[in-house]
Image 1 (spheres, rainbow, N blue to C red):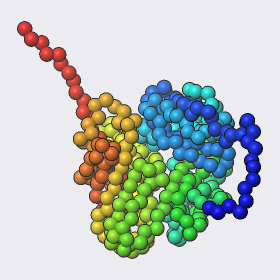
Image 2: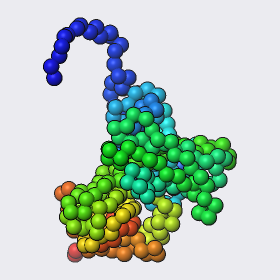
Image 3: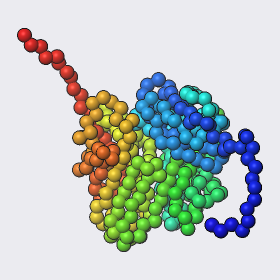
Image 4: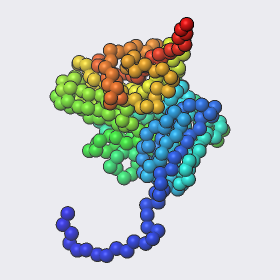
Length: 345
């Protein structure tokens, strides 16, 4: 870039970004002290969110790009439950640092879907306990400096709070929603939920990713009936999460990734699309998980139905062809083995 002129800059000894000299390790401790995996985000100031990924099975993770008093926001992703734990903590540069959950916890189910207009997203917040006031929701779109406040109204039929936000249609509809709620017992909670809504031209092929990078949908050209909006959103809707627990209890299936909701607006699928779900080393926590049995399952409203799937162990993902939108998750069978010593005379 051509420069019209140059000038000298003096840098003081204390000039820095406020980031810890060495990335601290944080351990998020489950209430019962057992194994639990969390998705973690780092909030710098009030605007910058740095996704950190997921912890190991004991809730441990190295925080990158963080400094003293930054906010660590974490949400349970494994084991599946209809009431995933969420919490926040102030970061220090000490390592290791332990974070926990103040009782009693407040649970929220947050779902973000494409809205009626091409630049809109619809937000639904379902609290497990009554709230003292409607939740505060702001949409932070990548590339847009100012967040969009979403007015939330109560839906007595479902018990959820709903609202619609208009984003900048000239930019990708990708970012995160930040939700603050206070229960009737004055317990506050802070959530960060990513969203990604993609405008797809029917005559062109497209690859759609979930905002957390764990799900990929490939749409060949002419897969959609018309131009439309497509999204893949991680969800923790109570009915689906409860079904995960029931499935894991009555079978020897173990959840590895998801569930994710594939949503289409303004179009339908005319032929199959390829859905790939990626899994981490911390996903299969139970001993004896059989990678050969990994399958993508679709939720049909009452049961999880397996799909014919292809497993790529080297790149840690499973792919399947889907023919309709809906809720999908990745499962594997637990291969329990009992070893009997061989005795010889």
